Structures are given as structure tokens and as C-alpha cells.
Length: 215
Image (cartoon, rainbow, N blue to C red; front, side, top):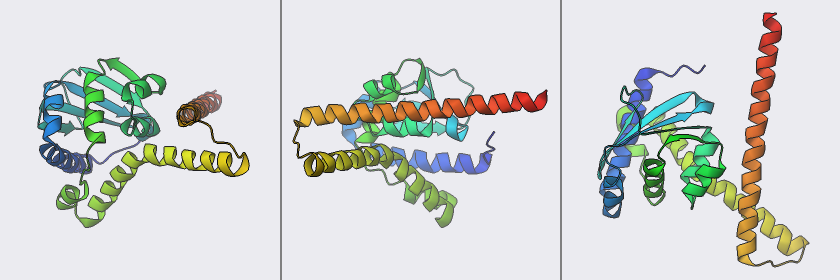
């Protein structure tokens, strides 16, 4: 189990919260969307990092990020970092949520609303995190957040480039754009499922090995 430094985690969440709320304040079109889910509490567990974060939609202009919360969540989601990265950059979060390995308890409304709002924003993660954590740690965490929100877009862009080059240069084919989009989605979905299956196999092997050593 990963041990997170409580003080560092709290400071990082405070910086991310400040950056997120600053971006929301500059995007008035998002206020009504967030206001519709105000008062709800969302729990997010990233299994690959052994990390749980709680997101409270306080008002249409105020979101809180917490490492601990005693209140019962209105929705709780659990998945790998890759699952959430794909969801964060998805053009259709509802479909991505259904077809991904993310487990959902409760209503998905607050999660989808938050994803749609963040996806439209250019968030300056670095300034608030550097103010709170200092230059080195602040920059590292900000860069991690930037990479996280670019991961899904980057994977899809790379897939498009490679397949398009093959079709045009090797296959001399020019299929309709709609068919290509459907193909890209299908391949990316298969890749994510293969990765999840591999993770499950590795967990089963680890459990089997643990049982063998205990006997």
C-alpha cells in the first residue's frame, strides 16, 4: 500500500483547488452547470495510486478538494489513473464512463458535469501549487496534472496519426472520416480493456504467489 505524506497531499489539494476555482471564476458559462449539482459530494479513488480524493460542489463558483471526508458521498467512482485520464479528455464522458473499467456507485451527474466544465478550461495549475509547495514540488505536481489531462488526447492523436499514415501511404486507402472515427474509438476501447485484463492477471498471479509462500 502506498503511503502518502498527509501534509504534502493536503497542500497539493489546496493548490489544485485554488487553480480550479480561479479557472471557474474566469468561465462564467460554467457557473450554471456547476450550480445545478451544488451541494453534492463526489468520491474518487485512483486504485493505481492508492489515492482517494473527495470533491465537494459547494456552489456554482466554488469547488472543494479534500483527502478525507466523514460525510456520505452522493457518488463514488473507482478506477485506474489511465481510466480517469481517458475520461478527463473524452468528448463523450457518459459513453466513456460506461465502457471503461471505472466502477460507479450513485449518480454520475456531478462527475460528468465536472468533467465537461474542466475539459473546456485552460487551468494554470503551476502558480498556486508553486506558491504553496515551492518551485520544485509545485512544478513537478503541476506537470503531472498537465500530463494527466493531456494523456487521453495524446493517445488518441498518436493513434490517429499512425493509422492515417498507414492507410494513406501503405494501403492507398481513403475511408470516410466517420468510419475512421468509429475505428479509432473501437481500437482505443480494446487497448484499454487489454490493459485492464493484464492488470487483473498480474493481481491474480500476485495473490497466488502470496498464498503459496504462506503455506
